[in-house]
Length: 227
Image (cartoon, rainbow, N blue to C red; front, side, top):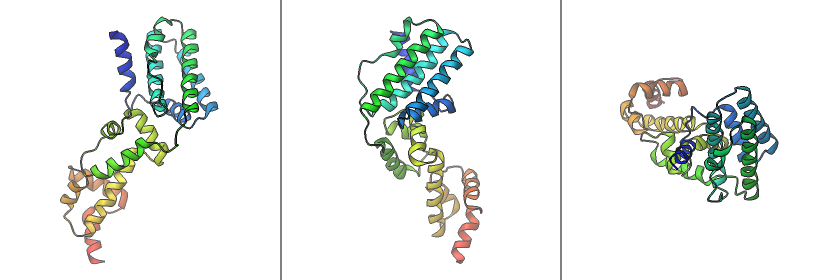
């Protein structure tokens, strides 16, 4: 039982760094119901596992992470309770056996999502946008917003970019910079503006502002006051 819990927990806390480009593509193809791309990514993953000749226990861990991550997509489709892949995979030992089992599980998840497809606009992103709007003036991590939206940080990262067309960090940064410009335009002090839009590090705020606007916050404020 302890071992099963370990696998389950690993799947649910997959970090941003662990989510490779190929895994992102697989998850996106599931969310958009692109079966051809989905099956291709699964085949590439299986081939990679076989070619690397990894220990079966390592392969199991990688497969379970992908399955649990894919189940985050299926949650919006009311994924059936009682599905315990970390128990089903226990008696699989060879790479070929594992790859066959993994393919069947992923196909099952795809079919479930397809049969229970909901409105394309994910409600979690709507919830996240409201939360960001109300809290951009504080330290706001991706994980915190994901938790508020009731999905894993890894899935949230992929879903946010797919829905919004840009990463979470870029979205929040642009929002903060736009709010900072409004405050500077009203003549507010730069250090006060920095804190008001969620940056406690004044230097970091100034560097970001110049990168996005082309001038320092102080120069921007002075120029606006003379306009």
